[in-house]
Length: 397
Length: 150
Image (cartoon, rainbow over all chains, first blue to last red; front, top):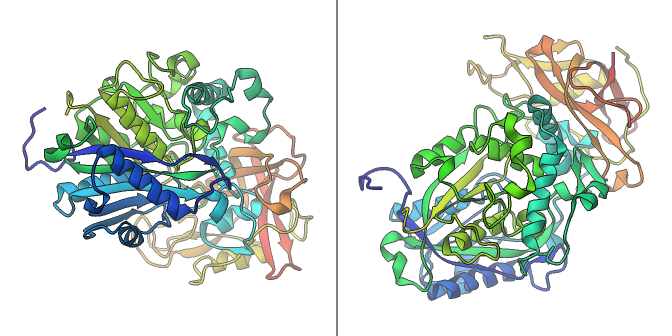
């Protein structure tokens, strides 16, 4: 696609040239400190690209990552730091926005080589699923926590319940998403759930966390780090790997999504109703162009909503579309979470999904899809801001 | 609507709600202790707003007024929680949280527990009324607004 150089877009301007991650661990099982995990992932991404880490001049992350950019710059001995961006918002809503912010810094001429990363050792700094240790709460939490609406499972279940009510979605659709992630994890040696298959009977026999979520509808809690390296498209072919281009990215949420105590006007939503059209517009693509999707599973129900909001099916078609055979590599209708994702590879806060999308475009996934010119990543459904990303090969760039 | 004390639906030890350091929600929490439900309503444009904010989101008038509303509504969504995400819930068993919309107050919503059998079937759209749950012996003391079927 030919576009004016003055057009305000990320499309085709920036490429991922390296990816890297640490070993992935159960929460508390990392032998390394969280900051050391970040350094290991960044060095692995630089080695994958074949660049000297001292040439990094920018960092981007999200969700208040504790591995602060200036400390990384000092530890790595980079020549100079030129860009340091932190995406506001919690959860994994920023996993694609961080890539967008890093790419935007490059397009704007603020930096030349940006590392985007997430490091998280829940065993060292507290688990997202536990909330003990607070005496008093104020703000939004005050309207929720005294009623036992404490951690993310309880905070999001009512949103999914309402969506299922409005659109007649059955629990089997949620189950298919869990089964797809576990199916893919069985051929991914990085996956924490590698060698631990899941079937319908095991899923149904698992305990309730909060209705409508069984245990396997909920993401894991893990330790690890993942990183990628971005450069401008002019330099994209100077490195070791096949470049993977940013085709589009979008960030945000709709009208008053953050209205507190569950007062978002569009409550039964994954927050992508305004963000998905922005993504397709920037990329100049439609849902039918997308060959493979990595969709952030905080909970399976969030994936259901996010996929519909990205136009892969209408909400009323959910029960027919979300079946295991449609969701698996190499040639299901819409191969989904082909590394195992947050449910079965590692809850690297969604950044493992971005790395998997890069592998799909390169053709190096352990669950490689056939249609791999365009890969989508969807970050953090039901939070605000959310974000998403389209990556592609040179053929579509 | 019932007022006065009511046994605590969930065990003691969960986080205690308090107003923010800037006291934005202080009128709300104080009113609950007096068996009253207050919701913000802009005196300028009559827009309802909850949770509270310093600004009316519709007309941008500052300091929306607090008005008393009858704690009646209907179930907008619900969940039955089983996993204890807090130490004080360990061994307690399932409990029901509901999201209640208040048609008489601009359809604002609030979260509470649905009193009664935790295994009861819950229906979206069911009519509910508020029950004030007081914790006078807590430090600091506070009150919650719970719900029961009408």
